[in-house]
Image (cartoon, rainbow, N blue to C red):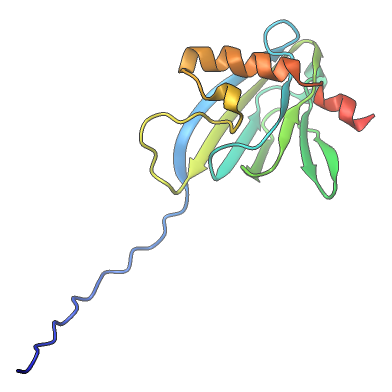
Length: 150
């Protein structure tokens, strides 16, 4: 018996549109409310961090990244954007005066089912409201990232 070969239908090539915006928020740092953020990677593929305040307008609160075999401060003026792979370990040093604002945007190719925690730390894997407090508590328990430069 002769088997009939099924012809494969030509599939339209889907062009990779690249990562799409998954989450966006403004982050406020001050010595009283959010003194620093410990080193962490992000859960999404690409992170864009836009400085909404100049580094010279507050004391401390420097964006730090681990690359080139060392912890590097990323000095920025208002409006500067830092774009990095979310696998980059990064942190914010302790705020000692003033207020720092940043616009954070997360991009990813993967579709997300519901809201995911944006950090990989177990302390952040809690509900949205508790997550902020738990992550802040976890960050406060960790040493100020800038002390690692000493």
